[in-house]
Length: 142
Image (cartoon, rainbow, N blue to C red; front, side):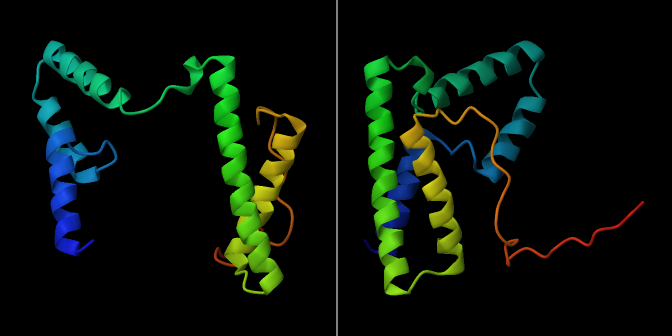
C-alpha cells in the first residue's frame, strides 16, 4: 500500500472512530476541554467516552468456560508458532540476543501452559546475566 493511501485510510479511520485512547495529543486536548466543564457535564462526557472505547475491547472476564478454553488454545497455538520460528533461528545461528531473551521468556510461558497455570502465582526471579541494553546500577551502601 502506498504511503498516501495508508495515511488516507488512517485519517478515515480516525474520523470515523475518533482518536485512539493512547494518542497523547488527543488525550491532552480532551483533558483541557473537560477541565472547563461543570462536574456533571464532565462526568457525563467521561461516561460517554468510556462506553465508546469499551465496546472496542473484548471483555475476557465474561467468557464462558468453552470460550475461555478456545481463547487459551488460540494463544497456545500462536505461542507455539513463535517458539518454532525462534528455535529455527537458533538452529540456523541467526538469533540475536534480544530474540534469545524473547525465546527464553516464551519457553517459560510455554511451561506454564503445560502446567495448566493461569499465571496467577508469583513471578520467578530473573535468571541469567543482566540485559546488555540497560546499564548496571552501582551498588551503594547507605
